[in-house]
Amino acid sequence: MRKVLAALLASAMVFSLAACGGGDSKETEAPTEAAKETEAATEAPKETEAATEAGTEAATEAAGESQAAASGEGLKIGVCIYKFDDNFMTLYRQELETYLKETYGAEVTVVDGKGDQAEQTNQIDNFISQGVDVLILNLVQASATETVAKTCADAGIPAVFINREPDAAELERWESEGVAATYVGADARQSGTFQGEIILDTPNKGDINGDGKVSYIMLIGDPENVDAQYRTEFSVKALTDAGTEVEELFAQRGDWDQAKGQELTANALAQFGDQIEVVFANNDAMALGAIEAIEAEQRKMNEDIYLVGVDALDEATAAIKEGRMTGTVLNDHIGQSHTAADVAIKMANGEKVDTKYTVDYVKVTE
Ligand code: GAL
Image 1 (cartoon, rainbow, N blue to C red):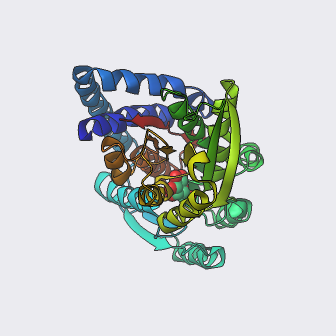
Image 2: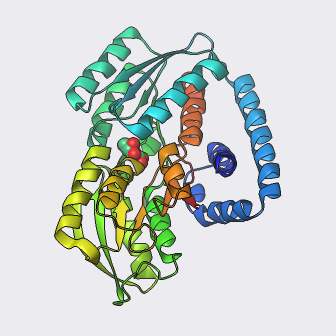
């Protein structure tokens, strides 16, 4: 599994580098290619190794090029994370900090917004008064993007928004007004679609009891977050687009949190019991909580219930391998953090960049 994951990360990295060099919308339209390559790579271990090597070489070369093109020595970079207590964003920020320091020799300060937009706004103001060269921003509320982008622009500091996709209208404003701001992330619609496809790939296409419909529960991240909205919508849309009838039994917010995922699933199981055939979790942390609740009810994973998440946390891929979870979708924190860093360094050096960079998701099953 480790090898497969390494290959997934490497192949995702190649795509991220492609995204880094190219425009915005094209990459988002090529998810299936990425998924196909991964599936093929999973089936052919030798090719996988070759692909990994090729990926690593491409990554090294590209990193070398960007280093040569833009130096980070002496640059001061402020990084605002929406909250440190988030499994996926912890992996992301650690990789981001290490990469910025090791690849570019930049001076990096990372701060914890503790889920509070007012607190984070103060942190941004502090970074601005300290005169940082560029800001990397994982906003608490994506709806604050326009205000924050204007504050940064007024201070003449370029801004790289990460993880929480701003409105399309705001991206258009950056483009038309030449604002030094960009968004680096992934297209959450793709992750939702992949979750639905994983269910469609099961022997009974998710209809375990054969009643002609897939009865599911939805563990929602944070309903204000576009990742949660799109994953909720597109996971189910993949089923209905394939002509599968669906029935939503339960959908509640779990704020990306493992303990809440456990609690919600336990409640849903108490209420709907065997009727639940599929658990869609907007992320792996909540899916890991769901596993606890499912196992407490002695339900048999992949026999009388399916469970899919997003992120491909180590704990989730281990659970998939052990048959305790059906699948997940790799949210490539390495590709995303490296792209964010590369773009931030370019902007700090006065280069013009695109308004959006996306990194592909990749399906992960046993
Ligand atoms: C998502 C990720 C979640 C959570 C969220 C925070 O992309 O899948 O686990 O980290 O970002 O905004």
